[in-house]
Length: 94
Image 1 (cartoon, rainbow, N blue to C red):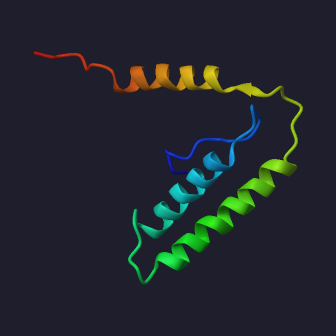
Image 2: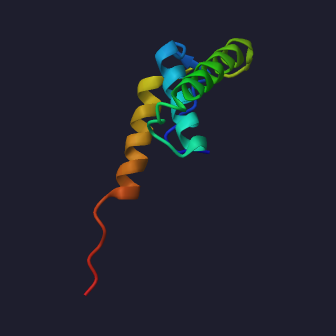
């Protein structure tokens, strides 16, 4: 899975349309291999983003879980801590 696409299910507050659109855009960029499509491909690119965003929104609406909603701030803090460990200063070896 693309690292930049974050889980959007089971959060309080729920994922916004903007977050869903950004995830769809990142997915289309990844599978097309293009951050910005040519003018010739722009319509197909934009249509794919809309289609995937709509499908993702529908999915998020119907998914069910018995788990309590996750807190966005707690999840973000855990991700920052994990990133700091992963990309923190490297030990110097002589």
